[in-house]
Image 1 (cartoon, rainbow, N blue to C red):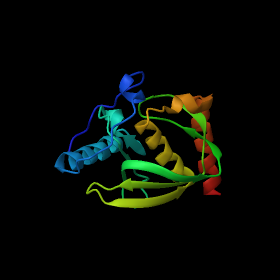
Image 2 (image 1 turned 45 degrees about the vertical axis):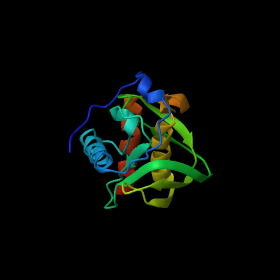
Image 3 (image 1 turned 120 degrees about the horizontal axis):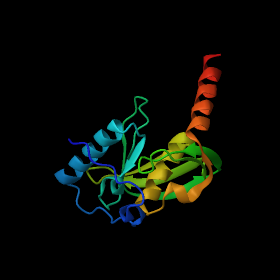
Image 4 (image 1 turned 135 degrees about the vertical axis):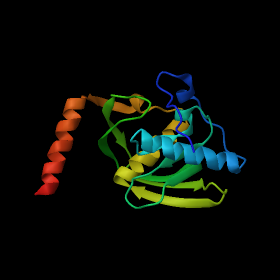
Length: 168
């Protein structure tokens, strides 16, 4: 496994529509392992292949809650529902945070590293992360969806207030 370099905006790689994966081999497994190691090293929640220079439909999400890493190969959104506005960031946009409107619920079909098809449903924060990464695979950047930019100071104040509320 290896930590890969994150592709930063404004690289044109980030706005390309990615190619479907057709070979489920050791090279793909290595890429997925590298992506996970890179995401952890960068303190991220998700990572899409174009963010490390690979323009194929591969993305991962890991909420670090004792769950397995969600590996999404050739993902397709099959249903969405509700909407919410929350603050997002992106490893390819260091220091940029903003309010983004996304569906509250998502259902996807995707393939695992061995090519097996699966379905997944998610809500809230998990749905948001999954949709953010799928956007990357379609060349859609979160900066284009920002309703309002949030400063780092405002973000830290919101997180501090949330933590104080959880302690009570």
